[in-house]
Every structure is written in structure tokens, then in C-alpha cells.
Image (tube, helix red, strand yellow):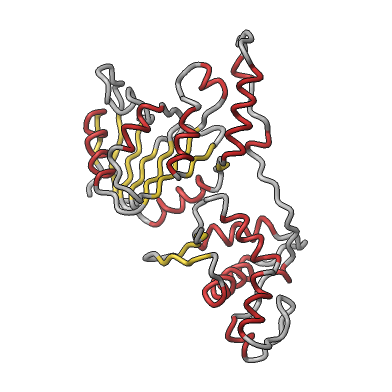
Length: 298
């Protein structure tokens, strides 16, 4: 596909075609999102498509009615992933990791020209390269994913605001808990596998796990290691779980000072994938053209 400049109508037509032909996954970044536009999108997706919606959804956006709070519960009820980036300004529509639309178009009826008073928008359609995926991955790492607990927290916050005078509403913020996932895991380099499962079975010793006795015992020991429980916890945040994502998580989560070299962290990551492949029923490895990712099975 040759990159092309699109007006509002052309942007919507290509988006509709991409959605209707989508086979696996849709990822949308949009600062402003309205419920009627989400429902429009739903009608164009076949059942079973994985959907990730990332928005800004500040309290001021809801007060000004440029975004609808109801999109959160709608997404969760649909089994979609929905998350927040505080300072999001990008508008990006990605289908099956092969078609990207970038423009000024928010996921609203006006932004997509669905109603008669559509905005005058401009966008570009193109096929992404690996550098594009790196850029998207870095953006996804900034997302604070929402669950039912966080929706209830947001609802309570809005209710407590009541009918007060909203002068200066741009300074009203969500509780910081909404953006700050807590972790009880304290990880050192010795928590990560420094050898492969095959080396372990051949008698190679490691601080990561006890000496090999039999496969079933080793499996249970691995499933109860600190790093495996940590990995399941961060996978539940529904981020872009690629190999690069995991190396970044290890680098940011490890407590050793000085930090291990990135080449060493890459080895930890490679070995962790191997241990998961050998012993995990809760995490599956998804292979792509030039990378691989992880996903919880339930």
C-alpha cells in the first residue's frame, strides 16, 4: 500500500474496510471517544476479534462531554481491553498489525464523519514496518489498563464530585491509584533462569531452581518461582507482550545495582521463553514473523 493523504470520508471508508476484513486484532488510540462511535465500530467487527482501546478520558473530558465514561464498562462487558494514557494526543487505528491509519480523527461520530456535521479531518493510511511496531510498543508500555475495580473507582470519584461548580475542572484528576499498578515482587538477577531447561535436565546447576529430579517436580518448582508469578501478574495488565516488552520489564523490574548488562537480560528473557514453552500451561507463546509474544491462556 502506498501512503496516501485522506480526507474525513476516505479515512472512514478505509477504516470500515479494515475493520470488516479484520481477522485477529484491533488496536485504537484516540484521546476522545464517544459511546455511539464505539457501537458503530462494534457492528463492523466479526465475533472473536481482540480489541484494545486506549484513550485519555480525563475528568475534564467527561465534564465537557468530549468523551463518554460509559465506554469503559461497555468495553469490559465486551471482553475488550481498555486503558488510559494521561497525555495521549495520537489518533491511530491498527488492524491485524498490517494496516495503520494515523490522522486527526478521534473515535467520535464527528471525527469519523459518521454524522452530517463531520469534522474536516486529514489522515494517512500505510503498511507498518518493524520500526513502526517499535514505536507502537513504546506507546503501549505507557498504558494503564482498566479493570472492573478501576471502573468502580472512577464511578465513585465522579459521584463524589456531585453537582458542584466545575469552574477550574481542568485541575480535577482521577485518584493516582488509577495509573499506578502496585507490585509485591522484589526481583534479583538470581530469580531469572540463567540456563535453558535442557541444560538443567543434563545436570547444569543454577541458583534459579533446584537440581533436576524429574520433569513433574521441576515443572511445579518453576510454576512457583518468583519470576513466573511475577510474569503472570504483569501479563494480566494486557500490554503489548513482545520479546522486547519483556526485556524492558525485566530491565525496569530487577533490583540489582549495578544492573546487569542488557545482553545478560536478553539471555534471561530467552531462557524464560524456553522454560514457559517446556512447563507452562497458563502462558502461551505466540510466534510472529520477526518476534514472539506471550499471552495468558485464561
